[in-house]
Image (tube, rainbow, N blue to C red; front, top):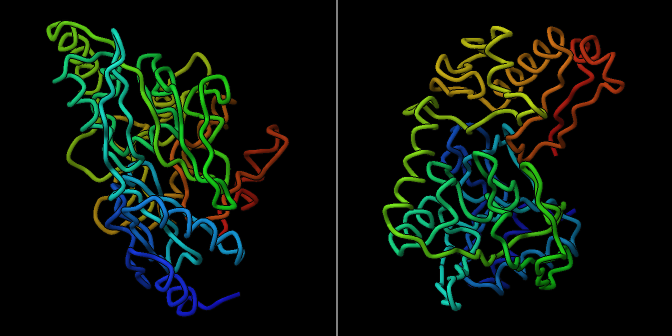
Length: 331
């Protein structure tokens, strides 16, 4: 395999954007943990994304994508391969269409900015996303949402770079979205942009909708560094309530601690590592399983880890996790 110096030199000759070696990543994460990317790029042009994807595919290199970093736990130490940020790929076009407007949005556009701009234009359909951090691309990958609504409900089209570097346009009916998941979020696929269909509504109605979701989020912790909700809600239950009932509030590993105001949030008190966060997630998950039989599924992503919750069958999960069979291995 090519050394990171050889990778960076080869890429720099192919790209318009710069390639950085050993780029620290903790500053790109809202949680503020993790190591560094051996090779890192922030493209501003479509062709650079395609070149990066083709190059990594041809050379057999790990390929990682990061947007707003709001639900990601970076591995500690060096992350080999190529880390690509979409944060400078952030344009939006507003396309009028009879009684609707379509937002054609690049993946790195901040979701909060799209929500605010939509409301200002008198467009409805994204009020539920008020207060959800991160980028539009990340919101599509995880079908971010609240109150039973998700970004996928309004998706008309998604543009992706496939593992071989070719472009693919996915239209309604060719993909599906469910709770915190989009069928297009397959390994190796890079979501580049999407079209979101929005309706027209009186400004007062939009503000009323937004206030409802704003009120619902007031119980979430503010001011600390976190990656948002740690676990997905199981069917018919709240992960936060389960964690709270099982006494997870205040649990800590190193400088990673479960929030006292909302048990589904892990905070970085200052010097937490990715390993601290992972260990705390495992401890919370194990405690909930042992006391309720419910096996929580992480909502945060793990970038730079070959991540696996081992321990099947579920009946043996408690012992197997204690024995270390539940692992997150470095790439």
